[in-house]
Image (cartoon, rainbow, N blue to C red; front, top):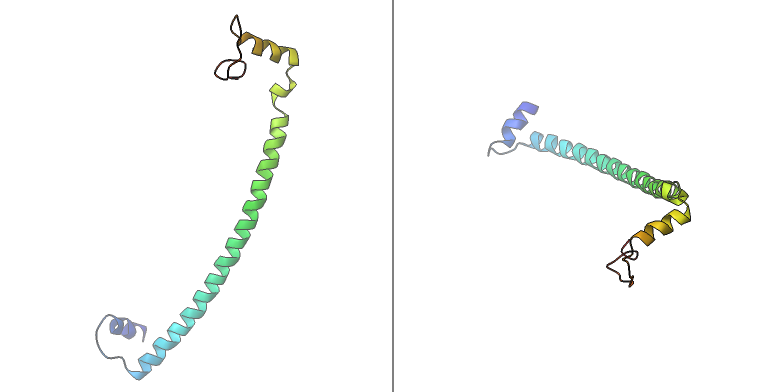
Length: 103
C-alpha cells in the first residue's frame, strides 16, 4: 500500500476513496506526532534556558571570587604607590592621557 501511495503522490492520477482515507489517517498520525515533538522541543528549550541562567549566575559568582584572589590585591600599597610614582614625568601635571591617571 505504501509503495502505491508513493507512486500516486508523485503522479497526477486521481486519488481513490480508500487512498483518501489512508492519507487522512497518515496526516492525522503525523499531526499528532508533530504536536508531541513540538511539545518535547518546548520542554527542552525551557530546560536549556533554566540551565543557561544557572550557568551564567555561577560564572558571574566565580568571576567575583577569582578577582578577590588576584595577586594584585595582595600587593602592598607601598609598591603600588611606587609604580604610580614612576609613571609621573619629572614635573608632573595631572592629565588623563598621562600616568598615573592613564593607568
